[in-house]
Amino acid sequence: MQFDDDKPLDPSQVEDVRASGPQQGRGGGGGGGMPGGCMLPIGGRGGGCLLLVLAVAGLFLFKVVPSPFSGDEGGQQGGQQPSPPASLAPSGNLAERCKTGADADQSEDCRIVGTVNSIQAYWRQAFEERGRKTYTPAKTVLFSRAVNTGCGAADSAVGPFYCPADRKVYLDLSFFNTLQRDFGAEGGPFAQAYVIAHEYGHHVQNLLGTMNRVSGNSRPGAKSPSVRLELQADCYAGVWAHNAVKTGFYREPFSQSDIDQALSAAAAVGDDSIQRRSQGRVTPDAFTHGTSKQREKWFSTGYETGDPMRCDTFSGGI
Image 1: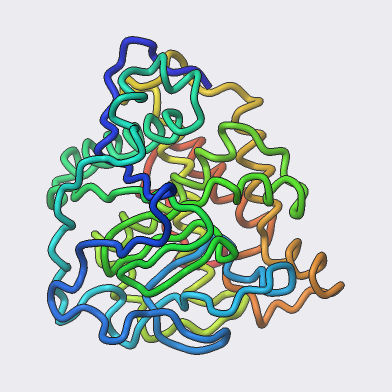
Image 2: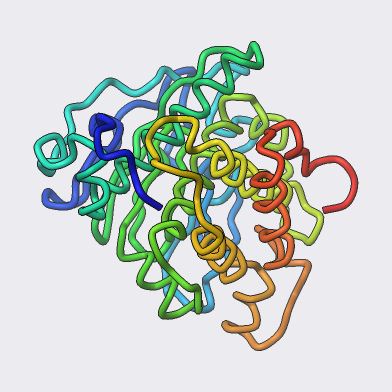
């Protein structure tokens, strides 16, 4: 996984609030927003945030988790999208440190910037090629320990997540150490890329109205809409990986070793794997993200085809 050394990076797509403590995410609220935020007790309905590791309650002692949807809104109201967040100058010195792909090869922070840049470059082009409405960029917010968002307050225990209320991806980089240490994932730079691409898959679902169509039906279960939504985000992550070199940010296609890192991360956070570790048994009725094999399958489907139209997890079996 090597970046093109001369490719300019756009650090404005990543907001670094780690040094300043919990920050209120901007944007969202357009079209009515979600009154009272969207953080609810475990098991509650409502919300509007999607987590990569929603089912890790047995491993993490977190007080609240964002639930997948809020009523009929799904981060929207009346079928309208919230206004995109205002452009923010990057903090945390990213603008000074992350200028080209050469910086992304040397620094984890800059690698995150380069990955976000590539993911959004792909989806912008994909929307244009398929005649969809214009792709609206989403910021990634790097935080440490706790952060305030358009979906409410969150801490690091909830893992990476996308908040449709403010159209931002939230990420505490310490999660990747946890992914290796507690979940047994292989780790590595492309495991990070997979996680980020998965969260941007949720952003694409938000823009296309998929979240809104599924909202109000967020019950768990092996074949639930929640599981199908998550597996589609895995597939979208694979689609980006297939097309990433075409965005100009990478020197060459990803290696099999890179892809293996993504598959290892996907397997590690399968519902069945998490449940075995946390409670010693598998409870399909409580699934929210899909099994390890399903997550690997749908990432691979996206990666092998490179076609987002092949990511229909809502028809037939999964």
